[in-house]
Image (cartoon, rainbow, N blue to C red):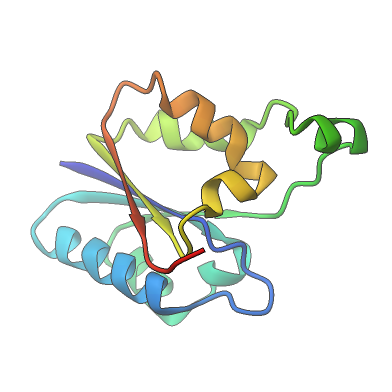
Length: 134
């Protein structure tokens, strides 16, 4: 199985939290069972010991940097095409785990809006785990 894990944590002040502990443990368990794992995390989270450990065990780690939208697109909530997700689709996962620290994270950050639109017609199933409220 090819498992893709995408954390919506934007990094910044708190690049690692309880939600990261949970998806990292799931990714480690998948690797231990012989599955292929790819993780997409904020650049600051990619430096965490758990992510480095996943990489050492064979996981593909994709660090993303924040992407800013033009003001006109921000107002219209229409992000420009975002090439960062090409690596996710090229990984060809059998399943995607979208890990959100809070319920509406993926829809709250502009960088995820293009991904959410593409997931609607993705050739793989995905699950969303929301670790906190609002």
